[in-house]
Amino acid sequence: MLGEHGFSEFALWSHVTFGCLTPEELEAQTGVTLDRDALEMQAVRGGYTTMAGKACTEYSIANGTVAIIEAILGDTKLVTPVSTLVEGVYGVSGHYASLPCVIGAGGVEKVIVPTMTPHEQERWQASCRHIEENIAKVSW
Image 1 (cartoon, rainbow, N blue to C red):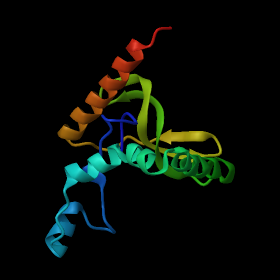
Image 2: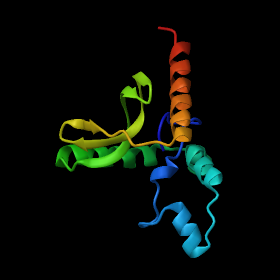
Image 3: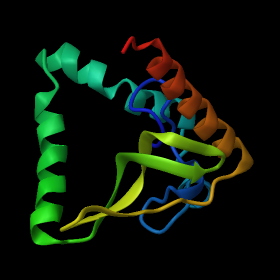
C-alpha cells in the first residue's frame, strides 16, 4: 500500500504477485477471481477491523516497528514501504508518504520509485493531495 496511511492509500496492483504469478495469471491458471477493490478496502480498513476486534492497534504497529528496528540494527537492507520524504515522485515533493524503501543501518538508505501505470500515478497524486490538504488544516 502506497501514499497516505489511511483512506487514500492504494495497492500498486501492477507490482503484485502471488508466488511468481501476476493476478491475471493466477486467475487464468487457477480460476480464482480476485476482487481487487474488496481486497484493497480490507487493507485500507484493516486498522479499524483490528480496533473493533481487539480494542487496540498497537500490536501490529509494534510488529512493524520491530521489523524496521531489526533492519537498522542488523543492516539487513529490508525493502518495505515506509513513510518517507517525497521529492519529485510523479510530480509530488515536500511531504512524507509511503513508498518502498531500503532500510539499513542508516535508516532509510534509498527510496525506490516503482513504475506506476497512469491510473496508479493518478491515485498516487490524489493520495498526496489528501496529505497536503490535511497538512494545510493544521494550525501552527
